[in-house]
Image (cartoon, rainbow, N blue to C red; front, side):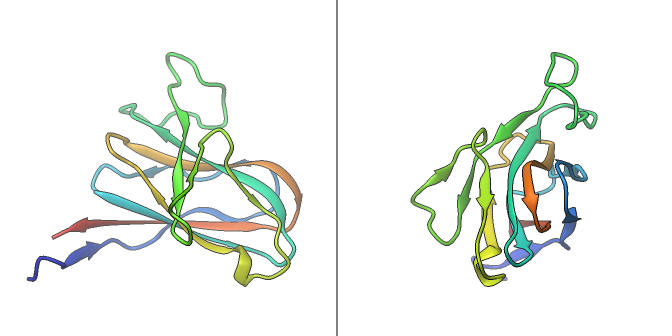
Length: 139
């Protein structure tokens, strides 16, 4: 193996053609050094999604309020198209583009210390969004 070899894991769906507000499937990210979130939204989608993370040993209820016993928070990410700007977790990603190509994006999520990652559509007008979590490790 060269120093550039990586082990990629199979994509795991979090949001699958989500066409309403609500949370996706929680993904255990403890085995991954790095996580990319692959996003595709339908033509003319108008929605906002946010990334959610938790360090809890069991899966929190990402659809319920944050509490001491339901511990999670919104987490930031970098758009791989323009990584100079951090997307704040509380702000999320607004998708409102006129082409599927413009709604097809990749985000790097800092999962250092996280156990669980999920996504939530927090604002919805039209369209749908699909997200896949792809983990990888440096070999």
